[in-house]
Length: 402
Length: 144
Figure 1 (tube, chains in turn orange, purple):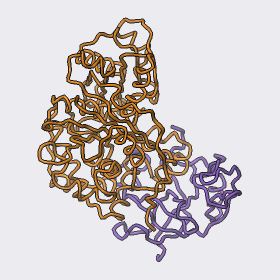
Figure 2 (tube, chains in turn red, yellow; figure 1 turned 45 degrees about the vertical axis):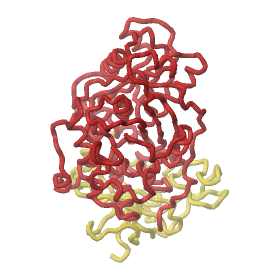
Figure 3 (spheres, one colour; figure 1 turned 120 degrees about the horizontal axis):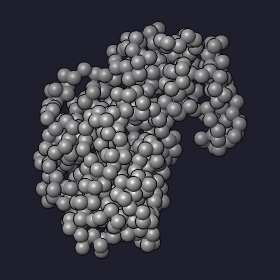
């Protein structure tokens, strides 16, 4: 009874060709911490100030703003104006933020810039889940517990929250393809090594060897805690403008070459997804690479939304970096390391070891890599890719140094 | 979070026949009137054909363990006194596309494997701090 690896379980979103239309010209990290008592507005404002400084732009230069309304406390136009004391018109989009939208926001920003609705678009995302967890509110599980089908047909049977979902997916991947704990561990080890070289990474001073990983007790078989992302306070911001304008700004130009979005027909009900051990990257990546005129083999550095080791492994397969099912042997050893590997991966440490800010720091890291300004710098990096994921959707963003 | 968390609301209309069936020892799953396929979760329109009417049917209670996890950490405090427990997905014999989330009980976790034949058992489900219990379908290896 193999899982159906057919293509009828999802589909690609239809996107306009925005290859080469925009560049990312400013990046900013907020401080990445454990519980800090900060609000998401404070975090997003700090990231925005740093992104503006990085780009050499003023708050009044920003005329477009993207965020995601999902947690109800993101950096809206009102928050932007209140923080910076501005009042000018802003093009606004709620199709920004982190996760899948950290990868797809450049598509919508490019359309806004192309049509003259905006010239300079800011995308931010911030979380304070570490602070909120200590107050027993919010957090990544809450949205799932509030879904009536999950609340009544999954949660009562202990299948909750996300570590349990993805442990179950990992077990099935092991059954179908022979994936091993050592192979999942290789992902965690590479990410931790990269965090050790990245200023601001939460796990910077906490080295992890494969032996350490294997000695760690399981918390939800086959997962150890090292397979699971951190819970963090933090956020990041990036600024987009036209390629022409980018050439007049201070940073090396990092252009958006391709965007793709894929969708699962079963949404966030992982239990019912036909291709149980796949992600909608199957549908997202081909369009993004086609728009960019590139192939996975052209990619110098990759960052994927990585709530769990298995989600990294599945996306690496589903984006075409290796055949489906071959991800385990592919990631083993040092393949993902920034210096000795052939596919440098999550070179800031990812959500496992850098911070759990839901992917926006991944995009910032890819830009930093392509500018040759990263901590764990990949030599001569020219092409970088972000893989965004939410479960119901995935996105692929192809960036290039120009 | 509602007061009875994490027990189900057995009166919630979309799944009420599921819990009513369990209370009398029957595993019930809805089928689409238009295409005759089982539909899970119990929601319309039918995910296969878009049909808008479902009829609940008794099924055999046989299936295969699609995948599972042995949970050893209490992400929610209500499960702390159950640890470790086995939770997972069972693919139904009548239609393996239906995967029931369930507890796997009366098993040796080390002996579990994907696609192991399992059968339904009905057990009271309760959680600390919640007065009522619910009869719930759980699964056990078929040869026990």
